[in-house]
Length: 416
Image (cartoon, rainbow, N blue to C red; front, side):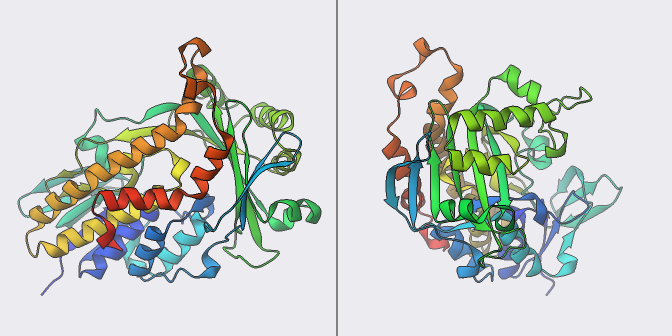
C-alpha cells in the first residue's frame, strides 16, 4: 500500500519536526524550503523545555548533554556590573542551528527540497497541489504551512490576518568563546544574566558554538536586548544606506553602521560593563516583535503549524516548543483518526487553537511593560510604570513550569 504524502512548506525547525513526526506514523512527508541553501547559519540562542526535548526524542533526536548548556544560576546585574539578585536555575539553553542540524541530518536527503518558493495552493476532493515560483508543482494528500510569521500559506487562506507590532524590537548578538577575552568569558559563562534598566530588558546566556559544540573553548554567548521602539524609529532603523525600507525585516548586513554604533553607545550607557563589552565585540542585528493569532488552522487539506498559525512574543522561550507540540498533535490526531483525514485535522485544530491563543496571551502579559514604554507615562498603568526585578528573574527561571501548566490545562501532556 502506497503511503499518503504530505507537503510541508517551510524548512525551519517547525517544518522539520512536522516532517519527522508525520513520517513516524507512516506518511511520506517532504519539506519544501524557499531558500537556496541550508539555514543552519541563521539561528542564534534558543531556550528549551521538557516538552520540546521529549518531542525531539519522539522524532529520533537524542537530546543529550551535547545539545545545550545549563548555567547554574540566574542573576540580575546592575549598571556597574554587580549582582543584585541571584537565583539557582537548571534550564538548558541550546542553539537554533544545533537543533536544525540534528533534525535535517536525520531526514532522508530527498525529503528536503531547497529553492522551492511557494506561490499558491490548489486543492480538490482527491488531494492538494503546491505550485512553486520555478514553475514546478507537487501533489499530496495534505499540505502543512510551517512557513513562519510571514507565511505564504496563511496569506492565501487568511489574507486579513497580519502580524501586529508589539512596540519593541529584540536586538540580538552571539559571540564565539574564542573571540571573547578569557577574563571576560570567565565572568559570564556561568550566568543566565539580566540587565533591567528602566523600560528595557536584556538577557544573555551561554549556548553551543557556531560549530554546534558545547566543549570548553568552543561555546558561544547569546544576547537578546528588548528595546521599546516606536513606529517611526522602527521605519528608520529598517531603512538601509541606499534608502530602501525593509518593512518585513531588514537583513542584518544592511543595517546602517550609524545604527549599530548607536546601539553600542547605548549599551555602554545603560548596561553592565561586562555585557557592553561583549556587545562591542559583535555586529548586533534586530528583529521586531509581533503577535499573531489565526482564527483557524485548517482549510480542507491544508493545516497551519508553528509561527504560521500563532506568533507569541519570545519571552517564554517557547516558540520552538509550541511548534513541536503542533507537530506532535498533528501527527497523533491524523493517526488516531485512522483513514479519516478530515476528522484528524478537525481534532488537531480543536486541540491546538486554544493552546496557541493561551501562549500568545501569556507572552503579551510578559511583554506589556515593554510595549507600554512608547505610551505617555500618564496613560500607563501602575504595572506598566514599575516592575519587580526579582519577579522578572524568577519568571524566566521557572518558565518551564509555567509552560507545563499551560500544556496540562489544554490536555496536551499525552503528546510527549
